[in-house]
Image (cartoon, rainbow, N blue to C red):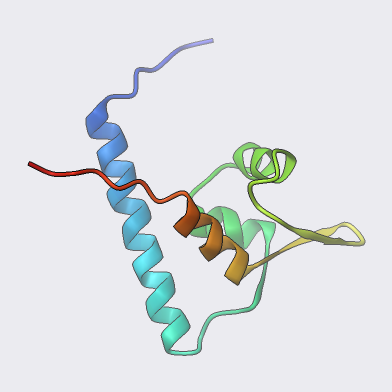
Length: 93
């Protein structure tokens, strides 16, 4: 299995992309165009994560969900809450 090294620049770039996505979400919410419940595919697209990562977020209890039949739904408010609770603040010099 090939390995790849993640640098601090990679993490910084990921952080900036994630913050941009959050800003877009907040703008959509203010305009009233956001859905209350999202399906797995929508959450993966929104957070730019793989199916495995989304499954891990469910399994470890990070991201609450509701399962109805074979479909899994995520509440938008819960996604935003998880994002805010996991925000990392760094002091810039």
